[in-house]
Image 1 (cartoon, rainbow, N blue to C red):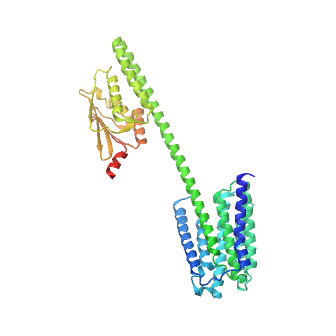
Image 2: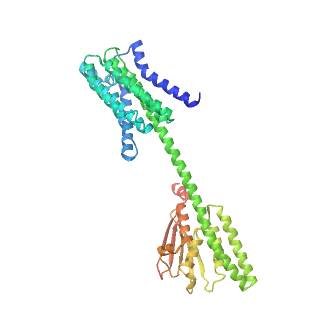
Image 3: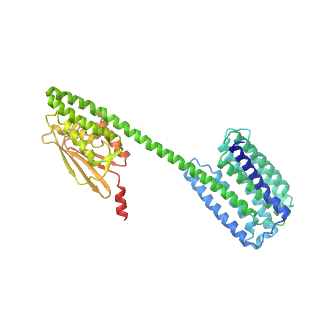
Length: 458
């Protein structure tokens, strides 16, 4: 016998005990009447209030979540009606024990019980066996409705137990068929068995009450509260299971998203590397054509830059100082073979922050390629950094010709687009301000620093 089979046997045994325990105990040892025990009434009122909260939660879920089924909300509502109409609640009111009141409570309780069964059947049928046409839900609902209609005259003559056992037998047999179908399909889980416990607890509560209303037992004080408490525990178990599943799904999604972002970052870096390496090799080749000494110097500078770039790839984020040092190598290298060299001005007031590796270089390269800062006499690129509140801000501006950012995207500015994407993945905001003839300014607002939050809070 495996664990799942043992769990099924235990659940079936629990359901059987819930169905029969209340009635069997009250028949064997008798029961207390429904008057004068305010403690039981207070407990019943507290349980009713708990189910009102559950009903509100279910109502909000139905309104907010499009895929949420309303049957659980209706089930909570009918359990509220059952506890309000129970003998336990009647202990709060001395005038609720006359024959007319008891008859009214009995009939309305039976209607609520049948409605609760219908909700449970529809819920299980839709959730666990939606394609099984053999278990026609409409037939069982019609049978329950006929039993409700027949219950009224039978209750008047105190023979309601006869019709109740008919509807109980029909409901239990139908539910057992559902259980067999679900178990064979290996779809039984904690929510399913919790729903089963609710079904049999409601049946046990209703049978105990019917025996009291028909005069077979002298009283059943406390049993409605006990059964309602079991139903409440089942709802809580379902919520806990749902919360655990939701948390697990959210965690898996978060891990997947983080992994996807890292892979995307690596892919973006890989996309940038070949683009630059091709241009660099062409520069080294040109320098060797000029002289061996120039070629060796260019190759050494390129090797230093490439070595540091490869080391950066292993780190998701790097210190800003380290990024600036490699940007300086990049600028020195690309200036080697250019007639119109350009200067880089560093206006750095704040450096104590990190950013994605190789995220500044593409903007410098952009100033050369698209803003054409090297073609203007006295062209320069200015890199500025400062702290704005708790957010480091980085600006890369130039006095080049400027460009249209949307046009640059159409030209295939992969390095620029990739740098923007990687910065955004790290929580930064990137704004590109450029226009023809007016130069370019790129404003990068990095994510707020946690230590700055701590300093502000202290």
